[in-house]
Figure 1: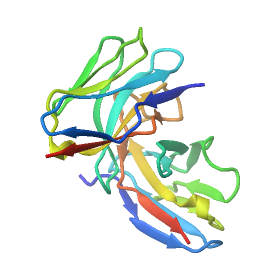
Figure 2 (figure 1 turned 180 degrees about the horizontal axis):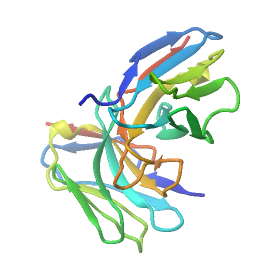
Figure 3 (figure 1 turned 180 degrees about the vertical axis):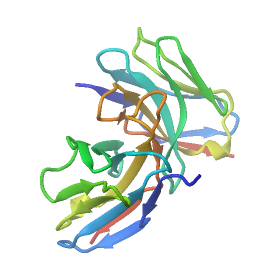
Length: 112
Length: 116
């Protein structure tokens, strides 16, 4: 069936480290892909998105490239900050009435 | 422009009671989605509504759960005769049109339901 698989957390890094959070999906067709971020006690916020193969979404220093050949949309950041500590969700949108399908989320902890 | 407003933020109910969760979408949005987030799990789609219509309720449990989005007022997610397994964070999201790449979802801060 259709699904999103993310690397399990928590992921703990030191400030200024390089970040990669893996995300792969199984879906028919060409879904749009998203990364959402959830800060403690809050709802999800859209971080970035991409709609077709080789598209790169970017925002706040985060990037992710839509890789059709590997069905992946890995999230990267060159130098993380303590304020990046949050839960990150990968999601895809097939279109239609059921909205987004989310991964389980990856808890990121950045230590000073 | 206020975002998606959910209330209450925290709700405690004893087993067997009813829980009512409210969601006011962003101004101008007529599409509402409800998601449930269980501990250690991602968000699971529950139901998609437009004004006065349920479009897709394929993620809703068949019993005890219902949702509405009346012509006037907020969307309501209602859980009757709550059980401990209903304890979760319930998130509402809204969009201008059917959720799409160009019409992304905007989420509220959620209602955290605890059943004792």
